[in-house]
Image (spheres, rainbow, N blue to C red):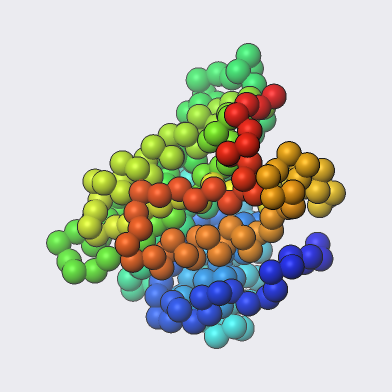
Length: 263
């Protein structure tokens, strides 16, 4: 897909994170990939988590190494409690330390309330909320009792405001992750800062073209679409901000302040 992002090619924090180490879940594709590249340009070393996207993860790591930073793919199924429980330790051991955690991976199944079963809720909560919590807690336990500090960013969703009736179980899991962002920011301080980014429509679903996003701008206060770099810029800001915790930045063109409902 061509990059029509008008913001240009350089991240605003170039080389700000030299020597830092980061784990990104779901880092091989889409917004995870964009964030990984932004962190790589900023000098960070990266552990790229993937579930089934082995080849894209390996290709991304080679691309990052070509930029002059270390990058390693790490496989785990976040739908499996056992694999989730060991992922952070594997990443820590491979990298030798950890400064940043980006909880980007999620599942996004469709289904309205009249179709939703308990298993649907469980599967979405496991991947979209429980796995980020387990990884964040493992990070905190590594830092507890030391002078080291870390930063976590959870990827949420603009439809925290107004709801998402077409993806009911997914929505419930993102609401849970939003609450966990607040709770972990309190409980795991001062070792960890924990914040969230709530993206709007900056990347179309895989079955749609960019025209789909253009059609949504009519209802946005800013009357223009966003781009994956808008999300990665917000994520990198929060990772590097030394006096911010428990915050959620909505990167959605103002959707959350304009729209109070969803059909």
